[in-house]
Image (cartoon, rainbow, N blue to C red; front, top):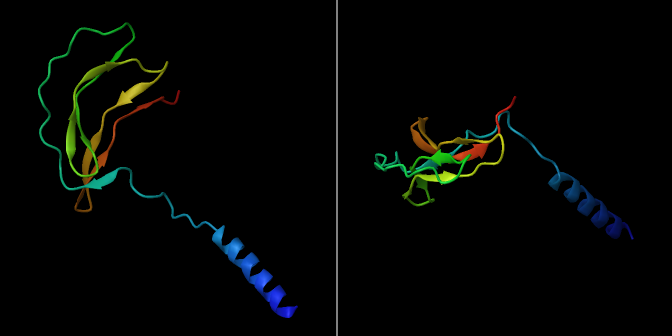
Length: 108
């Protein structure tokens, strides 16, 4: 009977320890490390407004996990109050980082 209780206590302790979370202050920097900067932007024309209230999303280089691929400029219909934040490319601590573009709602 004693061995059974020891096993139950050991399993219970393992479950408690597995549920513990340690968080570092501030978390990792935004973006994903990439192999280098993107190519120069492609030159594109802007077609006529697609629909009233649409927002133009300029073409940009998107990191696929293996390489950059060009996303052509296009019109999008945002949710009310949202704005487009273009992708960012930056150098930090000797590594290049890519932060994808996204729709966001500014704090008012």
